Length: 581
Image (cartoon, rainbow, N blue to C red; front, side):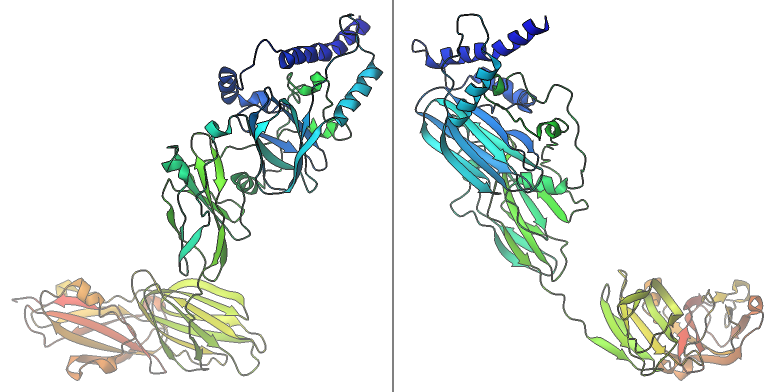
């Protein structure tokens, strides 16, 4: 029984060949160039050709190559003088491929006898058939390359591909009706991408529209690819780059590595050899391109599809950085694409910031614009074990960063008065970066020293508000209180008569804590006194301000003055005296 089954299996290929010869050599009936019903079926179910060696007419297939393991594909042209177009799209590695016109075997030995041809004779016949054929075209590289002939003879066309660098994906498209199919969008006469505007974080690109939109009335949209490494020649290569981290491929089901329609059954050898076992273990991953999303994964690459407009501004780039830009026209019906000639550009440098040198032990005034940046440098002249940095942020909060010889030592947001102790290093230099907030500009006083003695700025409590006792408010006086610290400091109280419609917005504009009492009028001064408490919970003082007018509004300020003469203003308080008592 096993011998009978074996003989039947060996006989099947030559029976199929006889049917092919009968069809191709028949003179009484011409076959159509393409069976449209069959073609539509192929488009609906491309999985029929996923692992097959047959290239369908008019449909793109995706496949996979292991390194140094060649693959063969076949395409039948049934009539002489038939147009033929075959396009190969490499993905992430260069390919070597060759197209050969190969004749079908004319007959089989033992024809009509019912006896199968001996195995040895089959092998010899296959070897002879493999050596037959006319080389038509060959190519080596990673460009999208096509073979195009307006009048091709009938026959069996064999395409052999190999990747010598690494395992890779690729795509094949073949058709006998290239004039009517045109699935790839056409490029304009000038396919270059131009850079029309260049900034520090933006690049504007422009290109001529694809004639496919205007002439063929087919839907086309453009996809922009941005990366820092190189230009891409196909969207297949972009997909391969985006999926570079996908290390595993799904294994095919047993027995499905070849389709029943494989031309190996027609008497031609398929991919035998030491790589066959390896090929049976894996199936290519061929993700479909998403036309409406911008993606950025671990790889530094961005893909944005923008519709049919042919001008686009790329934003969010880094200054002084070279980027590569590619434009792909995508036929949204077929999902097949054509690459424009990509370009590259380097964004402009950031405006160089002048670095302010800090002198040891000297307070420096610094102004930072809203969302602006200022740089300061401190270079101790002697060896040191630590550096003290005193910062007084007078307006809005700022972000402060300190680097010692390029190493980040400090990074945080701060407001009010702060002091930072940094570990020293012989001959080290310290770069201080101050960044303003989104709310508004900032003013700071800053002092750096490697010989700390007394703090230049007075210490402040956590709460710098002024409390008004409403029950003690009269027509001519108000009583206020504020918190102090354990350090003995001088406090000065000032008052200012303001209009009754004085708003909180006006008060905020006068909240600059760096403006000291020396800028106030003498008539506004109420009192100065020294105050502290060794017990922090009892560090509270009060003051009654007299000589006020009935029913009037006053702006009250408390200044605390440190040992170095530098002052810090508490939060201003708006108060109104009683109209009648």
